[in-house]
Image 1 (cartoon, rainbow, N blue to C red):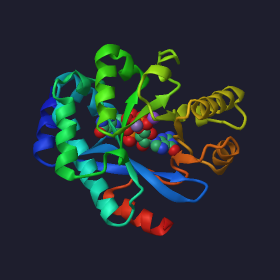
Image 2: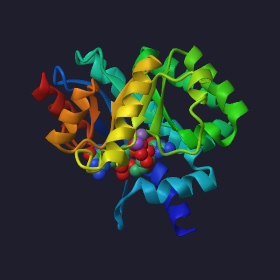
Image 3: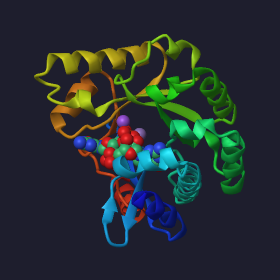
Image 4: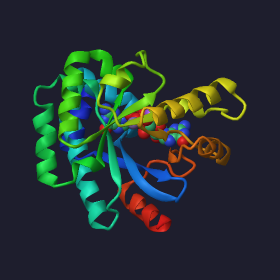
Length: 254
Ligand code: G
Ligand code: G
Ligand code: MN
Ligand code: NA
């Protein structure tokens, strides 16, 4: 209850912000995009992790106005990045399964596209496999509507869900994001190496983009590049950054 009330105020009192984690093309060392990650700076508790408050936001339904705030601000930031000359950059936004239960999800997204005037193909929506499968029929319909708006869809934490691979055929998916747990000890852990290689090959054969998450070391990067996986997100390049730091990071890379 405490967290619920505090979270309600957080939205009103401007305590939420977005950090952006760069996604880099390791072949060219150019930034290709950034994932928007929600941050809550509570006046007395300090930074509260999304792992703590997203579940509360989902249970209480507060994820609906918060999710709308996230999408609007990420799209505004994308618009700004494009205006600054980074015209090929994308922004990824995490959507919660709870948001798919809202009847006005699609009109909400559409109105933000109109309000910000961004090119929709540079907006990427991230969904986990488990979210996709909570209510397959409704979710699939809404994913199709999102695609019809020109937005791209990525499967987050790929490889950790409880779903069959067959859905990759029927669902309008553009990108697989390899879960960061598979990067652990990738040079010595044969299982993690095999799973990562298999996901990369799967994506290539299905004509999907693939992004490796949680890349922290040069050795992990080398492993991925040897398998022709060049889209990298992880501490090796950068942790999630406040907006000004993201803009500095882009300046340094270019
Ligand atoms: O940055 P990290 O600790 O930053 O994020 C923790 C988790 O919170 C991740 O699984 C991420 O997907 C989730 N998360 C971060 N921002 C958002 C958001 O805006 N919406 C939703 N639904 N989840 C988010
Ligand atoms: O949405 P998703 O669950 O993918 O959220 C990304 C999460 O992973 C965030 O909490 C982010 O801070 C974290 N993260 C991003 N890069 C790295 C990394 O290289 N190592 C680790 N341990 N965590 C990372
Ligand atoms: Mn994500
Ligand atoms: Na992930």
